[in-house]
Image 1 (cartoon, one colour):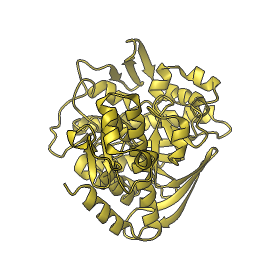
Image 2: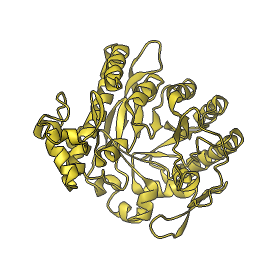
Image 3: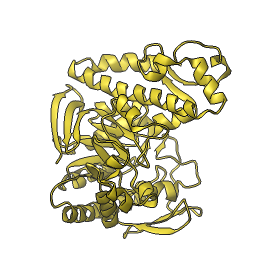
Length: 395
């Protein structure tokens, strides 16, 4: 059901502007994918999401499997109708939980690291809730401690019932601190899981209702990234996800290694990226889609995007600033409320604070990626990137 077309390529880069057509609508790319983890974007209604002109929503397979269960979601017609979202949809595979509940659980390790991070064996974490084997990932529910097994086959079955337009093959997301030998072993495992995912998906989806994306891993290592791009890229996937651990300073380069080898005529989704600099670099390196919980997570804690960088609205200096959060922003929050009001809501721990802040942050990132697309089409990308980043990061 997925059709992908490229409208414009940016000379000297891998960047492109295009369009993905799904059974539930079109997505103009590059596009930011709004994350609705549990079939809800935290603190926002689906009508508010539509008012932001969000194009596509992604839900989390692991969380919906645990609660309310994929069978309940299937009875609703899929997670889109369940949450009253009728545009394009995506689900992840549950593979990220191999990392978040495994090597990273109870630690400060993130899948995005800095270049000076020490390589260590994080495959064994005494407090972890997940264990990876060649069969799949065994984990304990963070809700009640019950044990569960995710395999490539069960991931496809769960995602089939969740009913998204675009789904992901089951993969292992490794820690950025994992050594080369473990990354190589994991890469071979992810390749076998990709083939198993394809086989089960094809058996389930006989009428081609869902599009399956393969996932490219390989950590920070160019050799492994390129090997994954060649092997996963040779399989009959409808698109590709780029996942796993990156060095913060080198995301664009690592993504470029992969996209130089992946089939050009299929969409590429960079998993879990939402920082403005990373979005620019990833687009320039050939990515079409991005998802990240950061805009709404930051918002709930009072950290807000402005054209002059991030601010923490809880700071005392904002309590009597009767001006919009960002004077150039056209979102509901900025056109109806002041910094002083937002500061009051957060200081008073009012529920509305999270809603108004999330509206603004999502609007900011969605418009940023829209503007990046426009800059590709009118050949102003490099100038727009320079001007935006210089102002946003000037501090």
